[in-house]
Image (cartoon, rainbow, N blue to C red; front, side, top):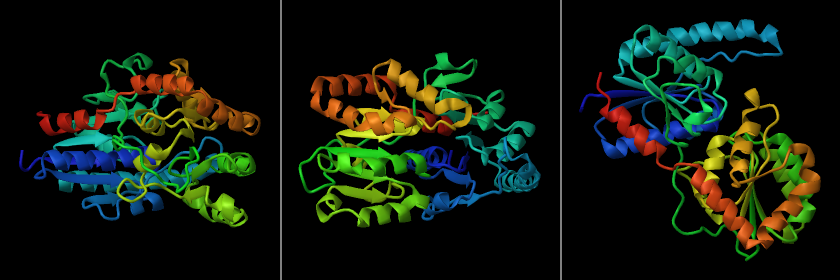
Length: 361
């Protein structure tokens, strides 16, 4: 057990690398003697997130384009280089077990794991399985799923829920006043189109509510310019952030704890974090998500009564009224949060960590 080596791979968006970060923390808390190596895709936000984490490195990854196919020549070169890097990692590190969260960074590692018959586990957050996980699923020891097994046609699917951190026991206060707080989350990369719609609604939202707005790193300058144009009074009701790190304050669990209602994309991790925080959510699915998975995620939880779904083209006419409706009807908010909380399991990270630690060939 002392010399057991684990390789954790996945990267790109927060939905891939944040669970890896949390899983590594959990494994180390169970057995600090275990060796862990983390492989990501090396995006700027990912490197910043893992800047203080030992054992992190990145590989070159190729991401194939459905529409701009001329770019795929370059992506093939990247994939070939990533395969060579991954081979070097596996031969030098020789992991006893591999865990993949998906994303393009995982493909070269899983390619060699299949070829060398190394044991690996994967986790799929969404109802629609991503291409990287589809490639990996057939030889995986377990395909951990964020939604119940009934959504997948896989004999090795195991429903564990989403890989999230549990919220604080007591609500955290972010604003100094006593107005209800609306939290808008666009994911690790922000949501430019959603942000622009929210800016148009500031005149309706800020007189009645506080607004915490996670805009994404690439959209921070624009958000700050919008903020500077507000009156002093409204500036006191509005806070912006680029990305919320678990190990910095305020972090995502603090922000969700402070919320009275959450408006977010329908990424599975964000939905689950909001659900276990006990906050009513309004989901705005990203219409260009691969396989339309965000809309399918949203409709699954909406059908259970755990969320209200508003399509992006209806935001300007429906969002403010929907926020007011939820906050004015305590029974509605309670029923939504109860249904959402029942929909998601919250112990996935601990279960996966124990499986990886205890796995024997």
